[in-house]
Length: 224
Length: 70
Image (cartoon, rainbow over all chains, first blue to last red; front, side, top):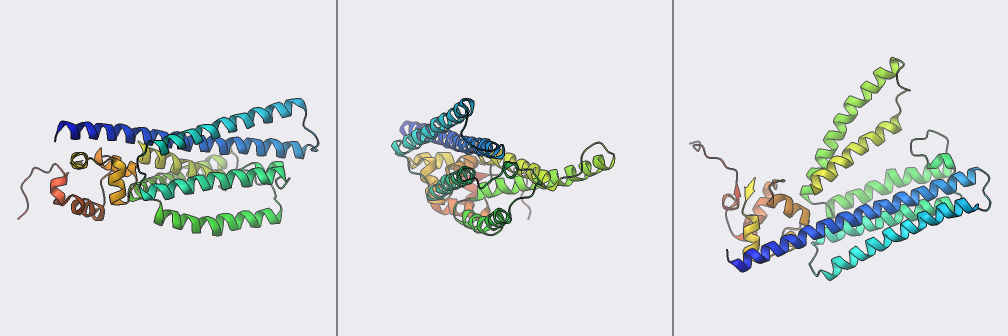
């Protein structure tokens, strides 16, 4: 290998390392935006549950601070996206599809949640993920169709067109660890409930614990 | 698994993105294969082999040093 080739390889590696870090920051900023939108949703739902009306000064200040944080994160995403474009390096086709899905998902999730909160479509208890409280039949049907019909179809397309085999392996290992977590945590919780130490086993909580393990392991295997 | 992917890529002045485009995988996948954190499937290994016009065993090294079975 010539010196020029070695130098080109180092340059390309540095550039790629920078791109991976940039993508990671963009993704984390996107997740941050979604979480902050969730905080706004919860805040407004709580406000509506307490009678609604005009927000007091403290409420406006809290909302203003969160909105400012969202704007800052949105600016970070935009800036990083521009940097990526200016670097001139091509992005593999699969990654382009992947990125479009991510941006679409963030936008759809964020805008839908915020719209529901702003239009009063969500009560306070409905925004609590692990709540077993009743929800309106319309919201229940909408969520069921979204999770049971639309999401599987999108996921199928995602797996065929955006996910490559390395990520598929990461998903697979994440699913395995999540399955083990479920197998071990569920009976332990059940025994401890029978022993009067823990509250009754909650399926929704188990679902989120399982998801947590799957996502953490997937993230580690894909980006380590 | 150790491999020559990084060297072969550099000889062609390709970035990881370029190689990812040729193999229809992401840059993370190329990086994971190059650093030995992920072993490609047999179909992907054949694809890499065809792309560089080299036998698989000249690209990938499983560090097997024992006698071959008859």
